[in-house]
Picture 1 (tube, rainbow, N blue to C red):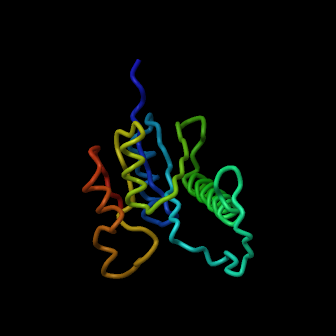
Picture 2: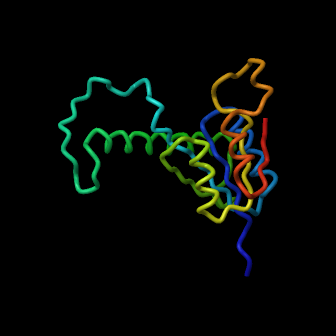
Picture 3: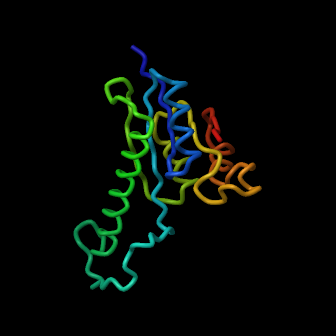
Length: 160
């Protein structure tokens, strides 16, 4: 028995990413959709407390309390992003095979790494992330999409 086609849909909360999710669900109704979010370690959320006290002690995982909290907050935010994205497409979980995944790292390299490590047959992604909306640069391919298109060995569909 063959496995279903695996479609990776990177999602950053942008309209282009949401369009990519909608396209993937419509185009691959029998596929296994992996909704993916790269947690950028260099992106600082506005609500993070810059004055948070850290004692520097590491736990058994090698994480300080501050980084543990950061990881928890980012994973929770990704879960909320996934829930909102799926709610917006009004998909019935019983009608579609949808998984979610996150990884920490710069989005372009993290997406490429996930494609290389997982059994992904196709990538469907937005042409640009959340920045530069409504500008002339909106017509061009974003840097993350460009890196993914150039580096992965599976087909990539870029959605506007």
